Length: 154
Image 1 (cartoon, rainbow, N blue to C red):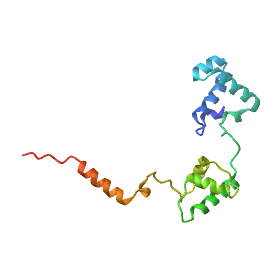
Image 2 (image 1 turned 60 degrees about the horizontal axis):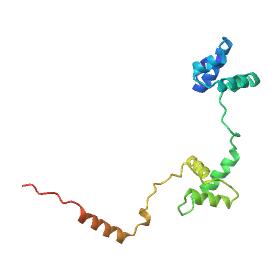
Image 3 (image 1 turned 60 degrees about the vertical axis):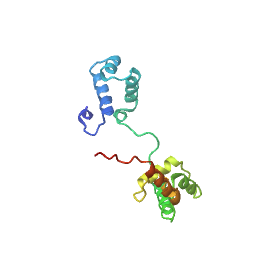
Image 4 (image 1 turned 90 degrees about the horizontal axis):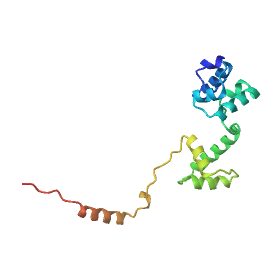
């Protein structure tokens, strides 16, 4: 089998190829499972899928439907438009703003889209913008009086 030496295979894919090759050499399912440290059901499932679908089953396919490039472009365009406004957004606010444009995404999905946009970066979560400058100065003075003074050694 030419897949055995394919450098693009991931380790689990290589294991599936090895399962099929060992089976062709007469190894039993329990022997293969023990040798490759897989569950018996996993080895049986690979053999069943291999017999039904062929070599294509040995390659990993990402779960779910293929990516929708048009939708991705639509969401990214809407996010870039919102982010260009003179205001600060968080992911929850963006998700609500997108719903007004009939784009329904969870906050988590919005964050994933934001990672793909180069102009956006997540900032540190601080309360600095909410601090009262007068209270801050008083607190710093109080802390300064409470600090231990260096001892004088003669």
